[in-house]
Amino acid sequence: MEVVATAKWVRTTARKARLVSAMVTGLPVAEALVVLNYSPRSAASDIAKVIKSAAANAEHNYNLDASSLRVARVEVDGAMIIKRWRAKPRGMAGSIFKRTSHLRAFVTDDEAPANVRKRTAVKMPRTVVPTPVVTPAAAATPAASTETPAAKPRAPRRRAPKPTTTEEAE
Image: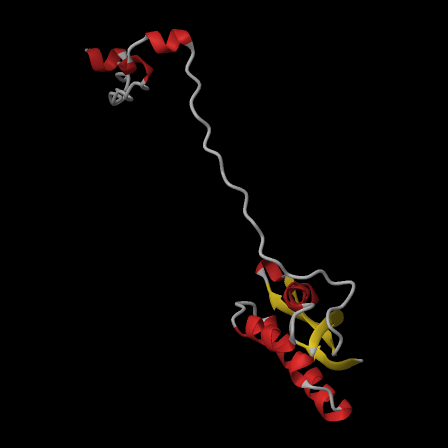
């Protein structure tokens, strides 16, 4: 059974909130709250509140076990934009958009949602350090010649002498 909780007019942009909601989709509620608690994003606290509310709704209204709840999805919709302005040079005004969003969290007591893939550890590919290719001609030359020569210090530039006029010469 899916249980929903909503939070309207949350003062965060929908784009930033969607990044956070993607982190917790498919996780158990307890694990999702831990992830959100340690997330550096400011929208994480708002999404955590909505998930807690959805879990409380499931427990209180439908008598579901809190330990078996899983975050099915978190929908984030853009809401009204509060428009302000700030004075700019030459008598102009600069726009300031204070964006808001509506959050909707769905929790379920099903095992794992079918449309969400399981989280697994990602294996990082090993980086291969390329070995230098030595040609037969380069192998015959001494090692000192293969090194790059040190940059010579540059002499300071000298200014050209000022042209003298005939009056100064006399």
